[in-house]
Amino acid sequence: MTLLSKTDDEVDMTAVAKTLEMDAAMSATVMRTCHSGFFGFQGSLMKQAVAFLGVAVIRQIVQSAVVVSMFEDEKEWESKLSMQDL
Image (cartoon, rainbow, N blue to C red; front, side, top):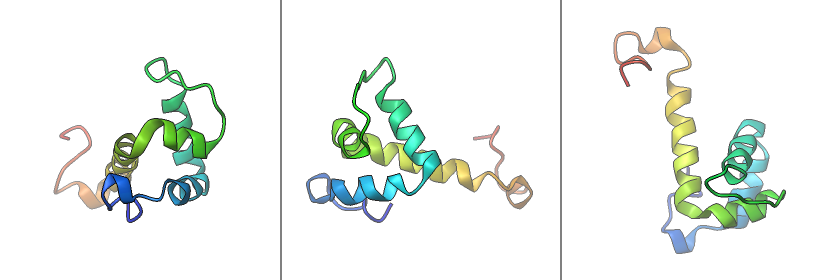
């Protein structure tokens, strides 16, 4: 999220790609999104996928992962908000 907190034209896409490659789950999500029927990307390199999707879509993918991870420990969130309530 820190890398993506800058304005779109200031984001270092190479650094974002390298960071995403360190997380297998995030890498898979990005590549699955790229290869979806909606986007139709045919490449296999993370750097190309990140450039293809763009900052806004990558930001949405990362933000979604952060929100979902907040609900992994439901005991902690029981009194606040459940995934179903969300």
